[in-house]
Length: 165
Image (cartoon, one colour):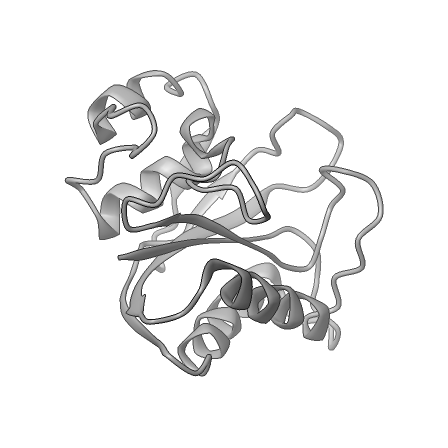
């Protein structure tokens, strides 16, 4: 099981809104050779983490399957981000698209990139709530913690599910 977090809080290259860009990203992920999209979470709106003056984010998670290396998948996701207009500047900057590999099965690794599972996923409601939509029984392969345990730790973060999901 491959879990990919999707987020955006700036317009895309043609001025389309973040939700449109996130949905477009799902189509692009489905077009990666060797990857099959199995399920898409609801879409959520969340406050930036860490708090900043940025606009809110639209977030979701895709559950996929496939025979692809973490490095190949990361390169493909970064190419999709670039096509959406992302330019990497400072850490946690506002962006038209952010794609992160949350986990690839039970793989645990500290190097090389990507680090798996994603080192900050367990501390972010904007990853965990949509992740629960597509993989409710998922456990963090590093800590063994369940979705309920992980979500309890982020209950103070501002997030809500979009009605139009």
